[in-house]
Length: 103
Image: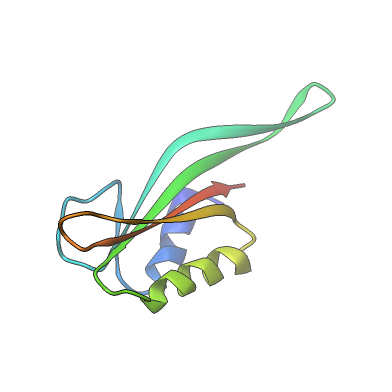
C-alpha cells in the first residue's frame, strides 16, 4: 500500500487528515507521519520493503467514536498496528496513537 492510498483510507474516516504533525488546535484531526521502513527477508534476500507510519488522532472528546473507526479501517485493510492513548496535560486533548506497518 502506498502512502497516498493510505491517506485516502484515513480521509474516509471523517476528520481532517494532515501529512506530518500539525500544530493546529482545530480538534479533531488526524496526522500521519512515516518514520522508517522495514524489510522482509527470506533465504538471505530482500522480499519486501514496507513503511512504518504513525497515525495520531487528536480529539477533545472522551470515548470519541473515530478511534474505533480508525481501528476498524486498519483491521479491514490488514494493516498491523500497535495502539496507545496519551492524555495530554494542560489542554485536555486525547491523543490516540496507531503505530502501523504498511506492506
